Length: 131
Length: 211
Image 1 (cartoon, rainbow over the protein chains, first blue to last red):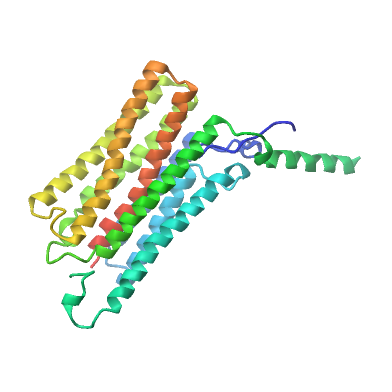
Image 2 (cartoon, each protein chain N blue to C red):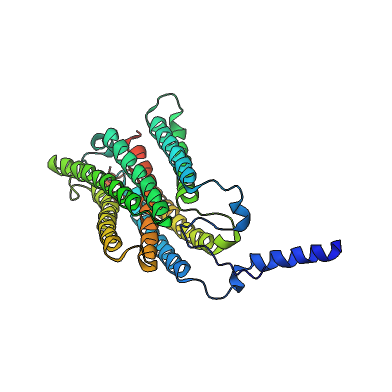
């Protein structure tokens, strides 16, 4: 009961006592991660090249597959968990994701809006996207 | 009697769950956390390049577009190399944890070879593009493409140099606590690069060849 327990370092497997009982070995965790990541990568390449799917949904499907694969990398390779010893790592990650989303989505929305508001018809005016 | 057992259990849970009251964290945790923050800021920098690429992806100025330039086969091989090297990097962390020097060197060697193969393929792709006049100065699309993919390539190069330096430290100093902390940071860096590449091959190469 007097055991002091610290937060786990990022990238380190959690050593919570209740997680140790039937936790899979590190080798198994990395192998599961590899199999899932390879499967998702193969699916991404298939989705991008197939003619079976509705064209309009392909970018959305690719985005979902990419986000799923990043999640697989975080959980199986970087050992990010929901355990209490991982709270700080997850909070920092959440802040990073927030900033990334603001930068990327914000830029895309603003530039698309700017293009829409340009004078209609004139290719010369469309300076952001000289097609 | 049962009452006191329940109270004891409650206290035990409290004492275990409050990591913040355990006193100063170990050096390993502090170093790892600091490096984690650095990696997140690095990813924020990448997000700025991604935003620039996404905005300029169609600004080809009459030059070649991604559909004409990108070779999916070589991108698939590059992705496989980087993913496999991330896996062997994980195996290296496990070998370090159990103090097996031979396995550590072997996993580091495989990681290095796979990373170098990735870099060689990427440089070959860049050289091929520049040779047909599709260099970074051709259009805004190509400028942002070379900046984004080249920045990732520079990170991989830095990672390879770092890996060589770390193996030299392991052979000279042995797996001391300091060397082990640096290796933890290296494996974080290498896995993070793989995450950036997942994002990159999806946005640049796969979405780039959609009509």
